[in-house]
Length: 303
Image (cartoon, rainbow, N blue to C red; front, side, top):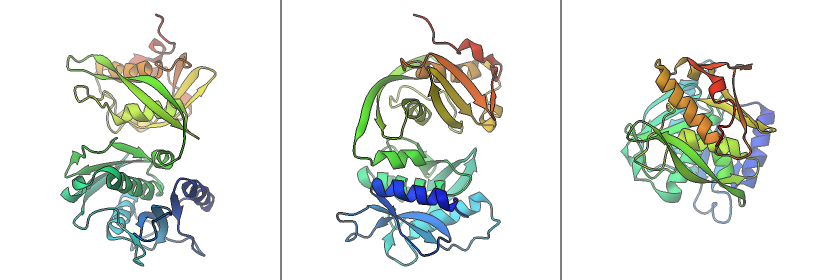
């Protein structure tokens, strides 16, 4: 029903430091949902607050059923009325699906009317509430099947929310992310990434790459449902852990597989400290990415 108590306590401490708090209760039961604080309570305090809610959902219900119940409760506001929904009153849940631990939430037209801080708070509440469920690690939000243009990114992870409210940027780094241009070739897009405490450059880069280009003339090469479980760099070697489901759903054509692999590799090699690339899935190092040998991108290109 919820993450283990130890994980919930660790999350509570982290969120409190970021201006997001969890309402304490004598006994943690139900589903952890994140709302906006009341107008008066929010002044000088935390904007987003978590509260455990009892929902009419069976213990053995699917993650999708639980997620739909969580979103509907978030839209309604807390059961005791002390915390408010981040959405306008006319917003409704149209659909919700889960694939490869990614929840895609489609809301009615009222959601697309949000902008600025209000839109960010709605995205944060939704992401934190859904990633508190076992089986969901990322959230995409649409309105009537369309991406919301004012959103700075289209796919949110729990870490994006936790880090975005921290007070100080540790450093900014210039990188190049590779997307598809109108001629069907990879083209670099310059980005300045902000690195916060607890976040690595490689993680930030991959998250930005998966979120897609900012330049409207470019399109993402990597499919929207492609899931990378983790990224780490050890003595110049970058290890990218890819979900088995994503590997199984690669394009059948070798040319499409190669573009995805090169988009990932070329983007990571724009970081000067990364000299080698290793792909891993289910604990095993991969020799092929679909039909493409991984050793074609295993070492930083010369020149």
